[in-house]
Amino acid sequence: MPLVARPLSLSNRMGRRFASKTFYWIPIFTIYLALFPCVPTPDQGNPASSPPQIAGSDTLGKPCFVVGNFPIPQSAKTNPNVQCVPDGRQTFPPIPELLLNGTNYSSIDYQSEKNMSAVYFAFRKLSPKGHTREEGLEYLATYISLYESMQLALRSIGPRAPKNAIATAKGVLAFLSMNVALLKLDVPQVKVRLQSTLKLCVDCSVQEKYNLIIFAAGSGFDPESVLRELEGSGCQSSQQCAALQRMEADRRNSKNTAVLSTFLLKSEASSSNLGLWRAHAANCILWLVMITKLVIFG
Image (cartoon, rainbow, N blue to C red; front, top):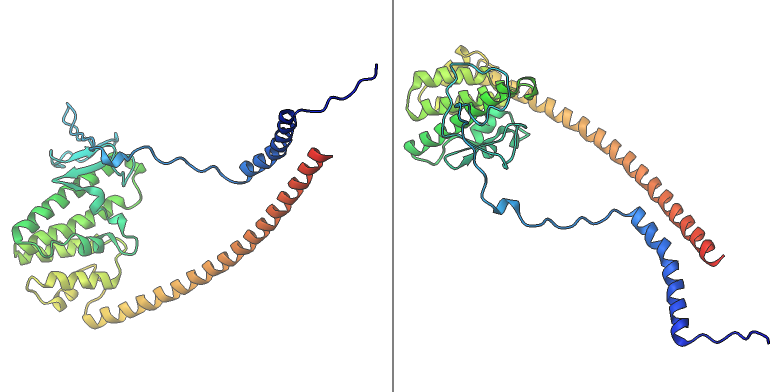
């Protein structure tokens, strides 16, 4: 008795059609996953919304921010009220975030401004302008304690500290101390602190040093005499400072022009490479699609 093919039911025909279409899309979906990165899942909750964890000195009296084993000066004085925030921002890893009187060290860290020296950052951002004398002295005391603590922390980690980080912190501390003398109207101390600031002004331009001198001269002394007497000012008269400032500006403009030219050349090369990559990727996709069709449909 000859075998007669039984007609497929509607459900069987739909099942086979679905299976064939599914089989067709499996390699396409696999190619998609291989060529495009997965989308990351959104963060679960906001860790910043939880209150920060605070740590103080340990049972032996060692400050929480002294995380290294390198010696620090025995004469160094630490503020016992400076606290550490383990989950806070680390400006100098592995040193934790520091907190004092509601101020985080990261909020006054000179590294937040890349286009100016550290001392000039302090001049622009940390000078107690617009505050009463008492308020200004309180702010400066907080800033000084935080920078002193960070300086000790940097000493404790030895060679892991960034180059010139300790010397840079010293320059900021000298400027903050000069501000204290300014608020106390102690002109002799202003001159002494100004000289220390200029000597410790790492990477300061002539323009920045000149502006610092004019700022300090507001306490009541002649800036021209300071330019002649002080070491580290970079010039000895306002005319010489102006000439040096023009030379610096010309040098900076020439450097910026060279950097811009290099950037444009690199951008052009990158654009060319990107175009080649796109063409190569398009060819790969086309070949993969053709091979997939041959495998599925023969």
